[in-house]
Length: 192
Image (cartoon, rainbow, N blue to C red; front, top):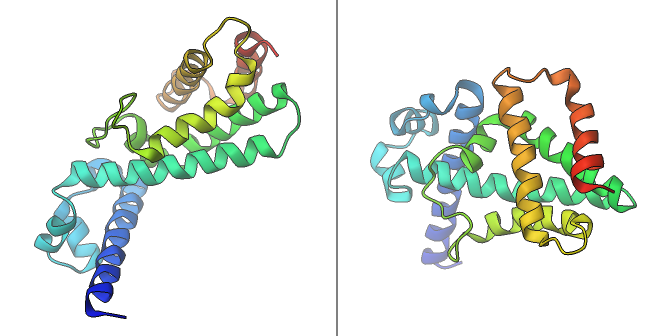
């Protein structure tokens, strides 16, 4: 291995450590607790080392968002692949999405609530974000209905799921009724 390859590997390792530490700290204490100073202390590197990887917290949030989008896409695909039939796939998708948000609230916020400097619904949207949407579209597109744009239907269904996540987390919806809400979404919106 050349010196350059070793340096690149070490740099990638530091980046992974920064992202993992930021994510852990955000999940434990919220994103307000994530500062470059606290991250530097936790990973035992100086702040200038952090700044050599990320220009600040916004870019770190973006890196967590991209990692989280990949994980969410994987979770949705695994859940939908485990069942047969369009109705079952849509229900599995909804549950996987809601479960991901519940298990990873800080990551969910990085993807959908916070400014990570990422472009959404645009030509230069990063591939992990496009793939997360594609994971939803794969199951939802097949139930959009005749004459309904599959992408638009997927956006609408996704917006409903996001609303359920944010309203439940804010204490505006009782969590014990989540399964009934999923059933309503599948039965009424997806109509399968």
